[in-house]
Length: 142
Image (cartoon, rainbow, N blue to C red; front, top):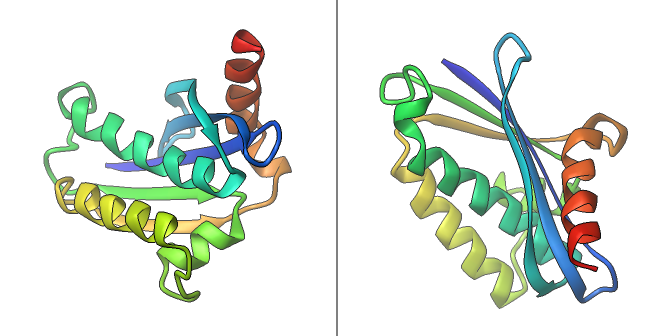
């Protein structure tokens, strides 16, 4: 099974009220699940990382709902944050200790999924569905 997960994080102010947006699609491009949620006050970068963490946690919590996730699975993350993608792919150094802690948690969550996981940078326009979830979540609380 292949899952394509589009994540986005954003804050209104930097730092400011922040939210994440997640859209999970199957290999046929059918949306399996999408949601947005607020995460309190955060920077844009923290929100981007938190979106990946929440998506991974959702996958762990919902393995039984997703056919074959317990077997071989490929999980492709798509983000519009070049920083997060390059840091998760080991291309850029992690200088910020807060971000380093996020990466440690991501690696722990990845290990519990028994799946091949990739991170790819995409344009903001290609990530509009996840961005919409961010803005809907923020609009509900502001």
